[in-house]
Image (cartoon, rainbow, N blue to C red; front, side, top):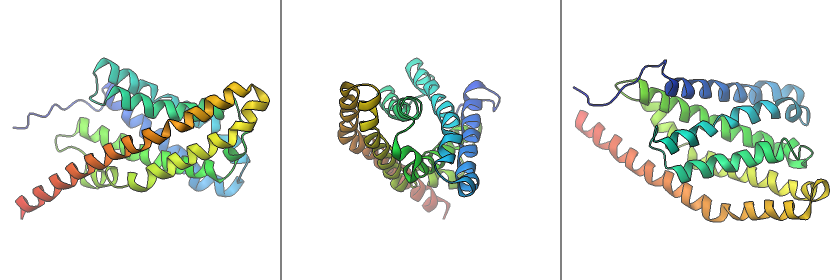
Length: 217
């Protein structure tokens, strides 16, 4: 008998993951079907508030990590969420006239974020609620798509933040501009650390899948 702890799909943690996947699915739907119709900058104006609300929901993940509800490392979780909050709140809400935010960088950002999060949240949902864990295709997507999506998301974030520097100085202060520059510099150590963590996890998962496949054969 499996010793894995299964929780109800109706439990708060499971529902959080399912609802989050649905919300990011709506954003991806908007990118694929709404953006081609209305284009930029209309798409940015129409969706930036929804994206902000959906992304702010990830604050719950910091709380869950802090309280030990999930095993995710607090520092890593907080860093990832904070960088995105800087974009959706700091840029989309307080510096909405940032040029790159209403350009193609916004589209690549939402594409990378939404695909990543749909896969991640569905992976967590099935891992929590199914005795057999997440389906194999979700496992493969979770530990392979990041190779392309993570750099794409980071490049889009940096493009948007860099584009906001002049706007920040004009609307607020030089200090805010240099704060944003300092934030961009944190990506230098942060990107290799987080990407390296995912690469290490990928090696473990791929090794486990190969060993499982050999046993079945």
